[in-house]
Length: 211
Image 1 (tube, helix red, strand yellow):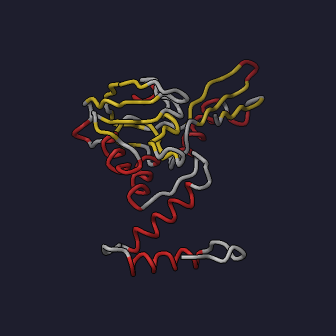
Image 2 (cartoon, helix red, strand yellow; image 1 turned 120 degrees about the vertical axis):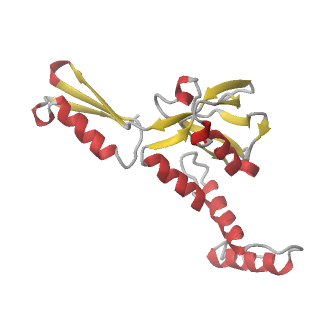
Image 3 (cartoon, one colour; image 1 turned 90 degrees about the vertical axis):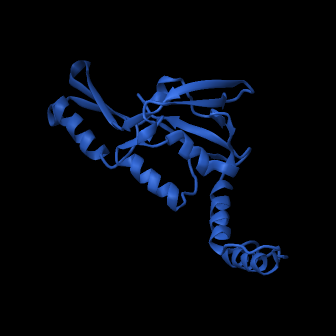
């Protein structure tokens, strides 16, 4: 399929490509899979590790996480478009992944000896999470540490993760400090509870830490 360089790529070009693939590919192709792949590729092309396409199954899992309780090791991952490896965005504070020393940028190469990458991403996420029957059971993760070629096996015990997204303490001179570790459905209420417990409007100042 050729495109006029002056018109470039567009939504129409994507539809035309899907039509040609469906018509001439040697096997039957699910059109929804083609469009999902196009959307995924579009977001990956941004080259931003914090932007990724969320399919229906991923969205359901994301909703579970933001509602504050789920099983797993407590880590957010995505696919690095450059090498198509599963990459840690961040461990969630006070979860097994955080305590085990998993860091942003680490690459997950294998889970329980099974090689993982973009080709089996959904399976890999399910292996990390497990289900309620897997709470208390170990999962062995092979990591390539961020910025290195060093491989390391880490054994982590899955837990039922109860996400606390806001924490607070009092600083000198009646200055309140609230840290938001992540955002979820309960973040507003947790922030308000912490704000009120510090003295609310009677504070001399408030530091809100979003790191």
